Length: 317
Ligand code: NAD
Ligand code: UDP
Ligand code: UDP
Image (tube, rainbow, N blue to C red; front, side, top):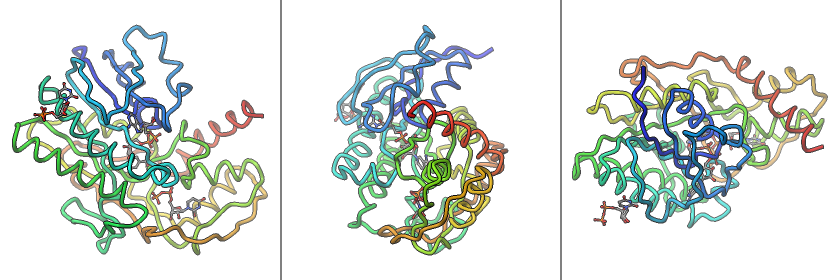
């Protein structure tokens, strides 16, 4: 039997946040889903709304928040390049002011707090695969910097609140994650390719498609979050969470075409600024400390993801 906890999930109406809210409610917790609905949508959580333990709060984390909670998962922040570059100043504010407010809240309530950090803190890495002790190679003044440097500063704040105020903090460095409820227009590679393949439109490969990414299925990621939050007070991370299976973008395109039975062709477009060449997590630390590793292979995770976008296409039509 779990003790019922009061849990705040910021960014709770987003892709990862909505899956996390669902998981926490299934465990019997009392969940506050906070969101300003910039990239998140009510549709992601509407199926949870008749649960009396669920509450949706329209709020922006850059402003203070006074609620009484036991745990905070801080996920609020647009995650896809087109969204976080839409209003870059707001992106940095969300990461930095958002972290300060949520840490202030954690300090007052003595709540445990987890930060959704990112593999982007490693920038375009010289070390492969990336381990947590690698400090990264990040451009401080480029188009991706609002996101990367905002997330790096948030990590700094988490560790300073730990040192100065003795908070129980957890920092997860999340690598590319995919699954149902990804936003169909947010420009991320898995959603883009599936949407294009289903519509029979050309698949857009940026650059020559030889850059690599490692893709983790959403349920595996949520399991990682919950285990991290439940880990001993002394374990702070940062800890990589991701699937070490590494694929070129071309390989992903071929898989999606094959699995959707699409006749889409490939078109090559310009590579975005500062696009990392390769990315793959070393998850040794997560294995040792959390007993965690991803269970779903890319092909397995693509099945429910494709099914989700097929259903969505029917609703939109
Ligand atoms: P998402 O865009 O679907 O979710 C982010 C949520 O935060 C949205 O619901 C959005 O409306 C909300 N939000 C944005 N700014 C806010 C603000 N100022 N106040 C309140 N709410 C705000 O993205 P996601 O993929 O679910 O990502 C969740 C978190 O995980 C983000 O912090 C992201 O940086 C991190 N992350 C995700 C991935 C990934 O592959 N999905 C990889 C690395 C890190
Ligand atoms: N804060 C908040 N909710 C709380 C407590 C604090 O949003 O329950 C905000 C507060 O407005 C402040 C920030 O968190 O701007 C940091 O709080 P902290 O106590 O660390 O700093 P201080 O208030 O001393 O500047
Ligand atoms: N990408 C692509 N076509 C698309 C969308 C993305 O080739 O339609 C590439 C992109 O340039 C990057 C990789 O796929 O190299 C992953 O992009 P995404 O935006 O999903 O995540 P991130 O770059 O943040 O890892």
